[in-house]
Length: 235
Image (tube, rainbow, N blue to C red; front, side, top):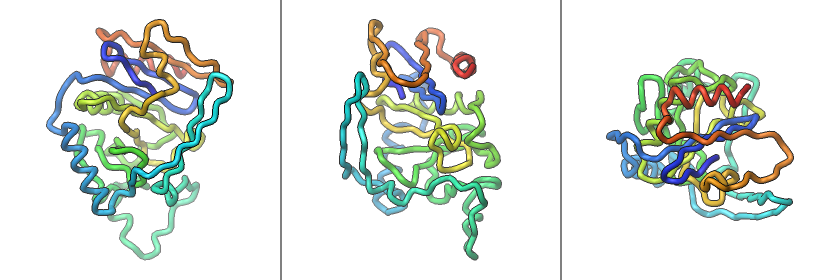
């Protein structure tokens, strides 16, 4: 995940996902205050499982500072299953798009485009914790991002007043718990792994695994350009 400076946009990529964020480029009617009010409404009604009670444990190993968060809202979060879930005589499938294993019934916030829908995450560790899912329920979380995905998340981030980060848990090894293709959005946390990108002379931390990042030119940051960079980082 990345926290950009006001004059710079950044992207990072590891072997299991990609993270993006952007400052305001284009406003939409679905502004941040509306999104927050919808999220709070869902949380207050119990539809969304969220509370701000958490325990943080820190561990430092060399240049890395690990933070372990204990959050009760995630206790019942499901894990990915290789088998189709049983319906148990309910109308659960009626609340899912064809091909999807994510029920968005009651969680919808609005359409971003004809290809993507913004919904609240059911099990949340941030306010708000959002998902950008594909309208096509047959698109899968182990597939790479495409131009529609990049466009939707870019313009969603662009409509927010404060800094957010979007991340994509690609496949089971990347930590996904659902097969329907989706990105997640949360307010940018402090002290990120990639915070060194905030300054031009910042140095990346020394870590025992391979990861990639790319500094973006703020005058040449378009969804098409981001997609090219994403493909390049995957090579």
